[in-house]
Image (cartoon, rainbow, N blue to C red; front, side):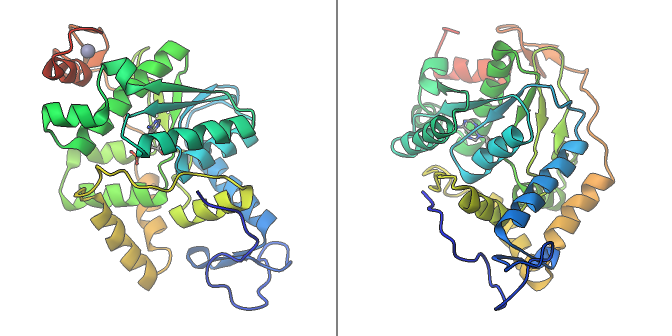
Length: 312
Ligand code: AMP
Ligand code: ZN
């Protein structure tokens, strides 16, 4: 958990002034060539989210379900959306990973309770019959890929059941830029258009996806959380060892250190030159659960079959 303190953030030249109001600066942002005081930083941060939201066809009165992991990104996204006046519900999926999931869940619950925000916690054991470690043991498949699929599918279904047409996630500029780099390097053309920060809904059952933090960097989110007193869980998932995504992340950070602003230029250029993917009409319907699917069985039902779980 992070504690709030009044120290400065980043290497700040002594007696620096806030670029916006000229008060004493506490934040230095090399990629923006700017310094900010606490309150101007919050203004800057909210503005970046407002700019992101302009790209999404989501009206201010549209309720948003926020997928919250308990980490810095999703808790920050939730708070900004609330402060911008959206009606939100936080939804957390407890993956049943010993210690990691308990700490994640506690962070979500104490954040929501301390700010009187509406939230629900769903347990993967209740929804699928197995915890993530049990799923891993039984299927022996790439655990991060399975976890990603399960979370996406369950969040879609929860959104439909809870009556939401839009789901927000906490993906930030670093996540999106490194994913884009990975897809380009590996020539994964089919995933490129999904690198857009807005994905339209598919039929009635699949909600639209938005990434309100795609214009802010991980470090900026850490600062926002410190200023706002957000106690997030900063542990890493014990299963994420061996994932390759951090390599692209580090490659971009190397470029960023040499040439501040590279990360945002790389991602924003892509976003500027692309449009949201078309609503996909080439989907079928899962023969078991009736949800949109690309094959006869959706990925969740085929996972359930592998797990030998006949219940729904
Ligand atoms: P990750 O896939 O862990 O990088 O997380 C990306 C985003 O997915 C987070 O910012 C959250 O919005 C959402 N998310 C991740 N884990 C959970 C969870 N256990 N429950 C709900 N949402 C989650
Ligand atoms: Zn299905």
